Length: 80
Image (cartoon, rainbow, N blue to C red; front, side, top):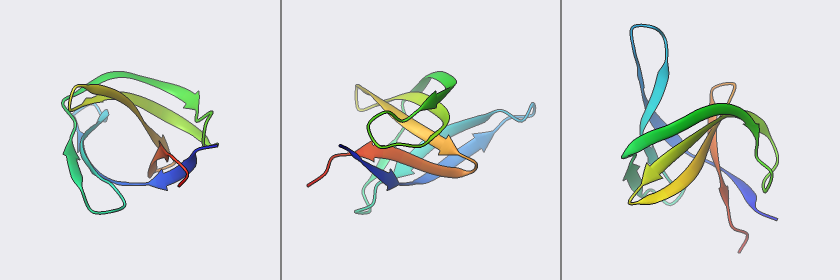
C-alpha cells in the first residue's frame, strides 16, 4: 500500500475563488513546477487512504494526482 505524503503547495486563487496549484515541494525538499492542471474533482486516494479534491496535474510530462483535504495537501508515495 502507498503512503500519504504531505507536500507544500504554492496556490494561485483567482478572482472567483478557484484554487490552482502552481508548484509543490516534496518531503525531501525537491520543488516541482506544475505544468498544467488537467482536472479537478472530489475523489478518494485509493492507494494511501483519505479523500478531498483531487487535482490531476502534469509535472515534467507525467500525470500525477495531488489531493487537497480541507486545506492539507498530499500525494500518494511509495512505501520503502
